[in-house]
Image (cartoon, rainbow, N blue to C red; front, side):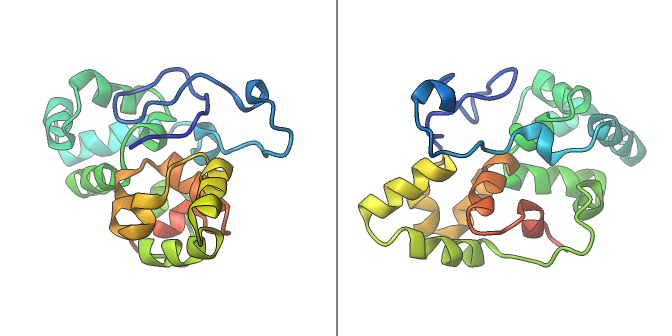
Length: 181
């Protein structure tokens, strides 16, 4: 996965490399500010994740192995609120939730949001990506490469929540509506 030029966050992971260039440094006045990981969480979510893991009886190392991440990366999920939306792919998020019996719609305060599928997200994006030039413009606007995901919408699950939030925002889709009911 490649993220288009965009700086954010306190550190980067191997899953999602983002160059340190910021929008301001790129000099484009017409680009709006993109969503930050902190915009997607509520304070204390890392602690609530730790509590859910403890209640499930699972160990941190066991979950790290299940998610195919390092013990340290898993520990950060329970120490820093933004990690869960910035580091894990959507698929990893679902795997973690299943393993510790975490209801994601409640965890992310999704309330009465409707359900949107990845195929529906792709359908909403397609009118803005009718040729290579319009696709490039859309990718620049959302900050993520989209070609692969428009061809096979199931691959949206490889992206972290922050990517889905950036992409969804461009077509009026709240990323949390992609969470299972």
